[in-house]
Image (cartoon, rainbow, N blue to C red; front, side):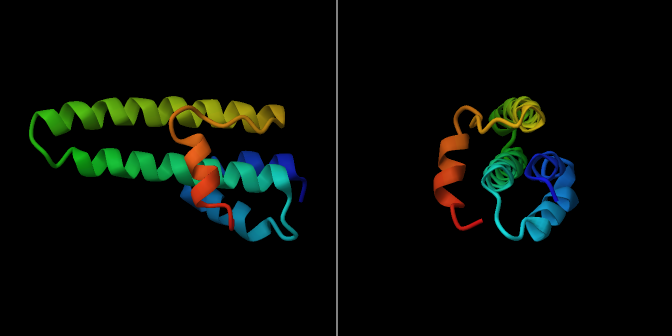
Length: 102
């Protein structure tokens, strides 16, 4: 499958991410980049949800985290559609570092 298509699929829910991960064989640089980006975005959103357990301050921080998660997701998807390897702010570079085996 074409790398650009796999990159786009990786942003379509966690099931799309799993599908892109499985179909990215042999590994294609563009697809792998976006698979790592989405995993970082997903985990950031998950952490935002966990923070919301804390009353008031956690609710505010979690809400901001959810908004940032959505913004990062849109930025990553646009980058995938354009066929670019542009990391999302704050978490993109770390996602590439932490998940380099994907």
